Image (tube, rainbow, N blue to C red; front, side, top):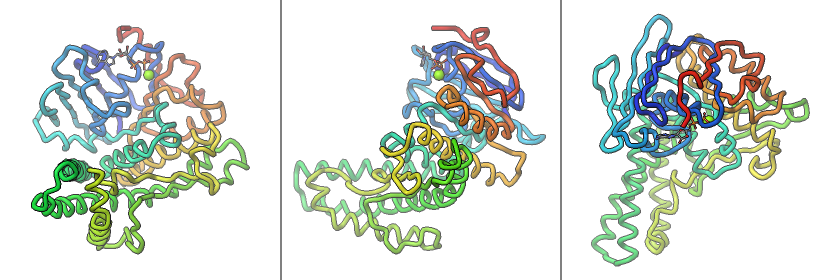
Length: 381
Ligand SMILES: Nc1ncnc2c1ncn2[C@@H]1O[C@H](COP(=O)(O)OP(=O)(O)O)[C@@H](O)[C@H]1O
Ligand SMILES: [Mg+2]
């Protein structure tokens, strides 16, 4: 997969940008603040309908404008498609495929892309929410129907929380009866999401371990294996998440967990268990990564998580030549020379690699390709 043409209108700092791209490596070089991240963020957004650095869409629309447009012509073998999304400051976003209007979610999967960014260190060192977002984003990239599952889970959670908050302020047996309906809606959505996440993590495991040891600084480090395990406050005990009845079984377990916490949840006015509270426990050599791993090891693990996602998207396509685009936003500057070189070797296999760097010398020698001086096409602010 590669993008031959990227067009931006009022996206972030760009009023209008029309960029021709080649397969292989392209490095965008410019001092800080010139719009390097903005540029690659646009492709990441088109790929997953979410930014890798903000959870809301509004900052993506150029200040003072009503909407931003990101459009890319993507090539897969001899076929190509033009995917376009309009991000609106007010109102629902819109999408077009080959100039024909489609439901926004139909864009998902058309331009597969994995973005590496300095923020990725937060996957190892940050809060559970960062790991959940990473997992959910990959889940949607692999199977776009999970965009609906996520939206259902979020809606059910918000409605249940609103009801719990009401009940805390004003006990009302009649109203409490309606909680049963929301318990079921929440449990079903939660079960679909938790099952999807667990299966995904199961598929990722060996890839994470493999990339971690490949990126390791030395033999000692590579012997310490990396692990990623789903963690939840709900005890799912005997549920076999690969089984056919996994969703039904999980729904029942969530319902039991809600029932046993009902008084506590009403007292707190909040849903206390479920996928919104889950985490991925990362470990290196049997110890938790967070708080134990060195800076270099933490980076290896963060990169291994993203590379593992890239592996799965490649495997899913069934065609070894059809690879998601790799974006490396200001990442090499964060790494020591060994990890930099080993990461470069791995990413060099991708059909298209887009790199940003403040200075050309940050781009590893292993990656030869085009260098685009953004100061020639973007405007400083
Ligand atoms: N919605 C927006 N409207 C206008 N300018 C924006 C918007 N979002 C970000 N910017 C500007 O983009 C610049 C940062 O661009 P960025 O791509 O992060 O730079 P870098 O080259 O360092 O990666 C900042 O000066 C910021 O003010
Ligand atoms: Mg940047």
